[in-house]
Image: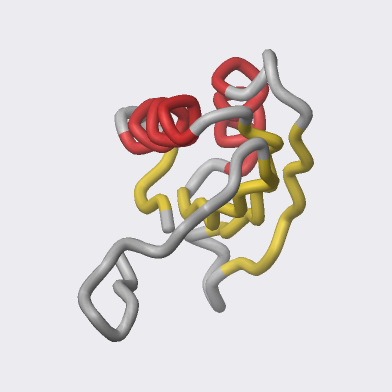
Length: 88
């Protein structure tokens, strides 16, 4: 987490659009998982890049989250899936 000059947590006003970057090896499976996890919220999933050999794919995920708790819950669910290797 990026902290302010005094070490304080940044202020985020909710509701807001939160951006995640997802990395995995199966783009179809990533898309399907995101649809299940974020289905209750307005979201946009955009393919970003793939590795040189096509083994890894990244996506940008923007989700309209009403609260910090919902944002954290979505993040945990994304991290806990086998299809998604990294969540940034």
